[in-house]
Structures are given as structure tokens and as C-alpha cells.
Image (cartoon, rainbow, N blue to C red; front, side, top):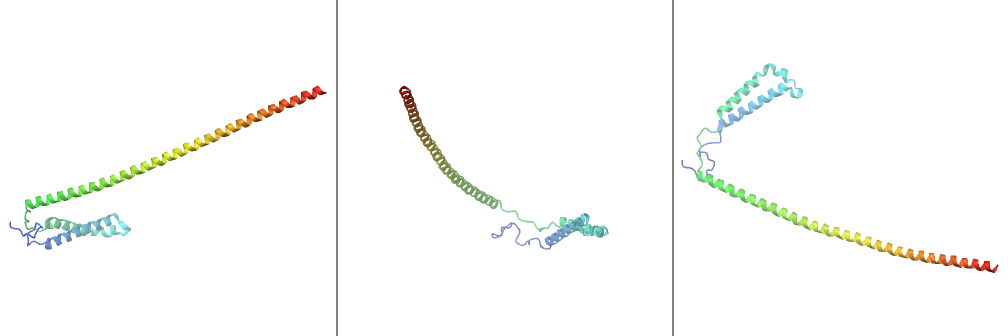
Length: 190
């Protein structure tokens, strides 16, 4: 079982890729599929072509073509009948190891990419969250300061109004007392 060094296909060096037998198998397969398609189109009257009436007596022709094509396709097999060499077990093991190492390296690089992306996303989300918290705290502090300022303003206005009320009350009482005194003096003089 000597093997050519440059031949990695697993086929003997003199075998062709199927030859005339492979071509005939493909032709019979195409004929079988085509005949079944014609039968279905006729049976279901697809496209209203009127093939059901036309094919009623001729239906045996596509059926026969299908039968012959399918049988020939099964018996011809489509490949070379020459025995093929078994590949070397060491070569297969080396190929499997190579595929496994490539797969492992691809998975590792993919995982590193995912970790990097998720880490960047996490860091950016944490920074954005921190900025939003600071902004919210600044808004709360501004609202608190605004409420305090408004409260102090209202308190000073209240104190001013109380002072004005006291002054008005004192003036009113003083005026009332003075008017009474004037009335009492006018009555005494009369």
C-alpha cells in the first residue's frame, strides 16, 4: 500500500472522479426529479395549464422515466468502483490534533474578545452610572438650596409683614386713643 506523498485525497492515483458512470447517475437523477415534477404539476393543475387532461393517458411515460432513472441511480452508485486506500491513522490523528488546537485557539480568542468587550461595557456603564449619580445629587442639592432660599425669603417677608401689622396696629390704636381724647376734650369744653 504505497502512497504518493503529494496525493492527500485518499483515492488511488489512477482513479478519476466518477467518469461516465457518475455522469449517467446524475443524468438519471435529473430525469427522475424532472418526471416527478411534471407529474405533480399535472396532478395539482398548477398554473391552470390543463396538464391533467393532457397527461391522463401519457402519465405512464413520466412514471416509467422516474422508475428507470431511480433504479439506475441506485444501482450505479455514482462513484468509482475501484477500492480506495485507507488513510494513515497517524495522519488522521495529526489532522484531528491540528483541528482541535485551531478550534481551541479560536474559542480562546473569541472568549478574550467577549471578555474585553464586556469589561469595556461594564467600565463604561459604571462611569456613566457614577456621572448620573453625581448629576442627580447636584440636582437634589440645587432643589434643596432653592427651597431653603425660598423658605428664608418667605420668613423675612413674614417678619416684615408682622412688623408692618404691629406698626399699623400701634398707629391705629394711638390714632383711636387720640381721637377719643379729642372727643373727650371737645365734650368737656362744650
